Image 1 (tube, one colour):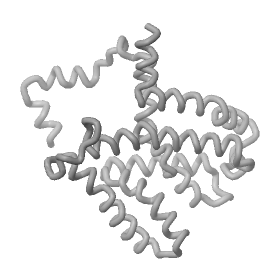
Image 2 (cartoon, rainbow, N blue to C red):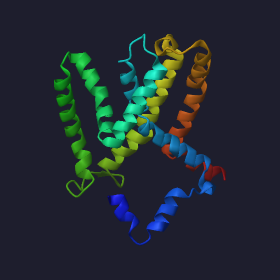
Image 3 (cartoon, one colour):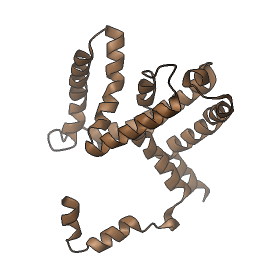
Image 4 (tube, rainbow, N blue to C red):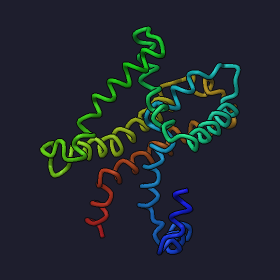
Length: 217
């Protein structure tokens, strides 16, 4: 209803054209790195979500078919309720608390939710006028948490996962149920391609690559 109403407003045509008409002149290497950075959050990479879900897959099940099924179901649920992303993120600490302390899922979810609420309070309050003094170097506490989590923790987490699965976890391919042919491609991407791209994404997000570009050009 909101979308239909928006189309009746003045300037709606220009807005639709801006949304649907791509400007390929702005598709640069930096834009690709920024898109890869957004993929960490959109695809739940670097946060252990896919690893946690993968732990529930039995050995006799095909990882490829299960990934398609779970992925399709995930995006259907995502279209129904945006809160599914929050549920996915919460599953990682909930699974850890359950296994670490032997709690039931309901208790683990309740304790984890309360802990996340308390930890998130400073970020939520600093985004408004409740805690105006909670600023460091010109940024609010929320801005710092957003910067650190998106630009540092997620790329570093993804890099750690790729290095662990590519070099340390000897039976990664066997556990994933990948055939011998695809395993060579997969392990090469994990060991060579993924770390390079992740480092480039992280350096771009923290501002090093733009700074280096200005120094050179």
